[in-house]
Image (cartoon, rainbow, N blue to C red; front, top):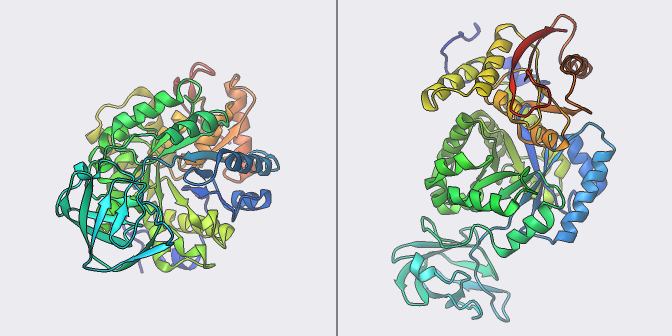
Length: 506
């Protein structure tokens, strides 16, 4: 069969039988976020995740206390100490505001029968039974309306509102289900009056996140741009280096997505709760929209929830799960995330390994030169005139393609330049050199196709660039005679001054 034509062709027209039958050995570009938990949080287990491909370690503050998370972080840093030169970012995922059902008294579970009527009361101390469900959200009657749907326990119980009273809501049970205590409750499409950060979240940031020097805050249930402003005010100057990842989990967050995207450092497509808030058949559209807009703005985006869910109990994922991960990569996600698969699954290391393989295979189907040109044209059409650092970054990628460069080297203080270069999707690896460990963890953790080396000082540009060429040789990325594109500032060790582009030959 003749090879696919070049130029304007259908997406994935470059996939051949060789792609299917032979394993892709190229460097993985997409980053992997792993949730830590009992299944992996020993020093040995964490080391296995690191070796398998973990780029960011996620601490889920919906569970555990500060002492438990601090001990986990100590073990992670112990595992990293025996792997010099390896950088893994740390993400604190907030519990966030939530609505839950109440306690059930003496019963552990209650069965609700289809067609029956229940009263959802806002007196949270009232024990629940087959006719009463207590709700933690005091403003439920003012938020919902007749005809609205209420979902309990991830949608296992569906209720339809038939009457709104002063301090309670009457609803009809739409399906028979058995529910336990303190289950999550969703109000699809409703605008809820809950705080951006609960008192617990604030304490988690100020008493743990900042002192423990975490790299990212995954902020749950971000609903508007002002939420990001408030989180930054809580982090203050001491936590100014911490990047905020806005988790989009409900319709209000989708409605205000553009404003949120402008203010946040990154996005998490949190498909679990989002699938409760909007119709499940619409979640893939929301995912594609959010990834596309984040790509255009150059903000890292993480696709999360149930990516390899079956591997909690099984050693191999389903074909549908593999396709889901691959399609997220093809959509343009910068990172993919594992939750229960690594936190409490039976096969944490295997889950990371297979996810890394899926990412590499999906990446082999991408025409990066075409994607880079498309990104540039889209940015010019949507955003307009570029600022100088982005123009240099975009030009560095175009130059790399034009001269068939094998690597792009960037000297960076803050990580903003490798982030801009990665935005234009080079096929060749981006090697970032920095003197700041926090920058290395950010770049290595979230920036697609970027790899970081920490050096002692950013003074002496020429010697640093020659060292970068040596590192490229050691990694097998370049050989004698190869071209390398280099980006750095005219002024040494000055953040935000990357305005020089040059070509070096190994």
